[in-house]
Image 1 (tube, rainbow, N blue to C red):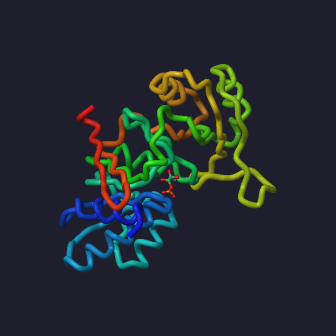
Image 2 (cartoon, rainbow, N blue to C red):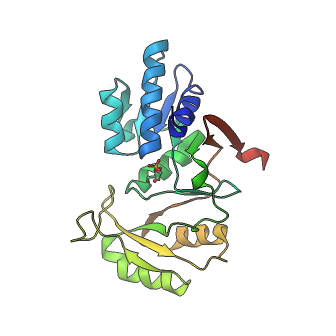
Length: 228
Ligand code: 5RP
């Protein structure tokens, strides 16, 4: 079992009978969906799920899990997903996929948000490896770009996989990948991005993770937000 699989197994064991589970998106989230489906089948648990993307919903359904529509859900017990970066204070960077809106809705709605990573995702500061993904209403992108530049942001609209057009998020937004000065305070940046009209969502998940599980050589290390 590799580290992604062992951390996914560990997280699946924390799901109890009757829970509504939020499913993330990405390769780590896929390992969790597989582990959850196995646990549900082997132990006869009654679990319902809600997915942060069409891809994850399809995978969960194919593995026999019950997947609710977002519109049916007002409360989630536990949301389990990967991340691109995790800071020492457990702020996350997410959104290298294009499903940020649902991911942040689940992270915010859930009683517990378990984040599954490998050590390479741990960083000193958010933005160390990746630009910050920012979803923008298509008609507003020039105005938002100007606002972002006024706070030192520099970057580009994301291209699609074929590099012949801009990428469109699952929510129908454009995605700008923006870098800021490394010294910028992440809480201030989070608040600022939340306040710019035309920004639909962004990849900083500030004070949302409850637990980060780190897979290291077959072992799982746990960091709790409350213990910081
Ligand atoms: C998608 C995400 C993913 O959780 C993040 O990109 C990590 O993916 P992976 O588990 O494949 O490394 O935020 O929007």
